[in-house]
Image (cartoon, rainbow over all chains, first blue to last red; front, top):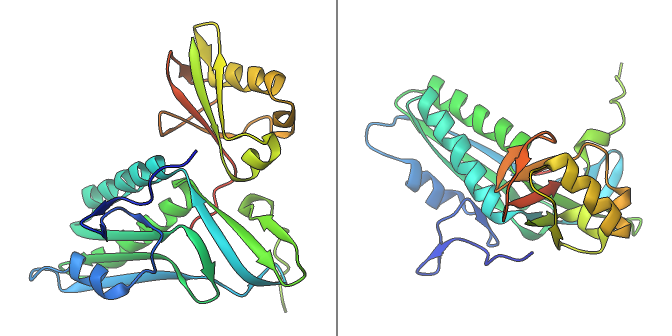
Length: 157
Length: 81
């Protein structure tokens, strides 16, 4: 199923999902307001390893209309709990190591609400927003990432 | 009644299809749609017993009702962020 990616107005992304590189500056501007003195940012970057394997690149895909709607719902939940403005961008398409995969910017009057709203939104996003990640490994294999099937973490002493 | 089933990521690869329109007797539940899908589409047999599901772009449960014209999505384990 393909949907037009992504929500745009006059060539500029206005949805939460984007196939263009994420730049932090515009997101900070979008969240800023003179009465918001505390701003927290979470950035998820493409990592070069997963479960001991070397990752070369990856591709994100999404159920776009639901991903937009679910992100709207999560942001609304955060706004109901904290007096914070939260801006989210999540990439779809092909990414390389170090690219920003997801950005969450939360702005509030003070830092406590900004930290809490930011944490809430990234955790709920990972749990609820329909996005999938296909990883391309150095050994030539390609896999859809299944976070629920990861081997148990070995405690290091 | 017609129900549109969407498959994504690993489930789409397994079934070899991403959109499947299934005729179903009303009323139905998500579980019933899943059962019919596995009968109708050979590759869908590999789908788990209890996948994540969404009805009309809202997370739902296997027991959730499915109505005429609904869009049912089967969601592999989410991996965003």
